[in-house]
Image 1 (cartoon, helix red, strand yellow):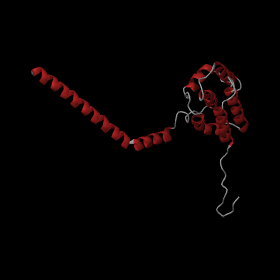
Image 2 (image 1 turned 30 degrees about the vertical axis):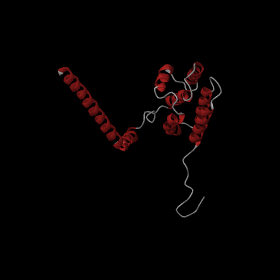
Image 3 (image 1 turned 45 degrees about the horizontal axis):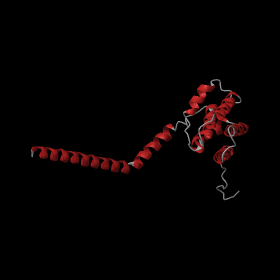
Image 4 (image 1 turned 120 degrees about the horizontal axis):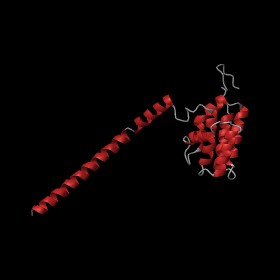
Length: 184
């Protein structure tokens, strides 16, 4: 009989502990759900003050290497021919003195299967500020060469390059109307 009481007590203790843990997890999920907006707002404020890691890149050559790596990592893992083409372009025309170190640094900014525009968009202000129109077209040409190093560029890569080209060549929109009511 004492054994049965001991077993019943242990079972009751385990059940109590499981129910208590379940209730605690449920309460934590509710608090997390209730504060999602605040969590997003805090992240947004932090990023607006400090910026994302890509927004803090201030070297145009590093930014170009980041895009060359990401254009091939968007669809599939990087191949030897694509990596070789990137190294060739880093040597000439980019003239980067520390090719392997710069490649490793740029690699940390990229992510496999990440949409190209999520990497390119934060770098657009840097390219617009530092590159001439001709240099912007050279950047698009370099990205196209890297995308076609292993095989013909995929539809995803072609669309990403076309979007980048449009966004790079687009200037600040001019105001069509004036205060006097003249419409251009």
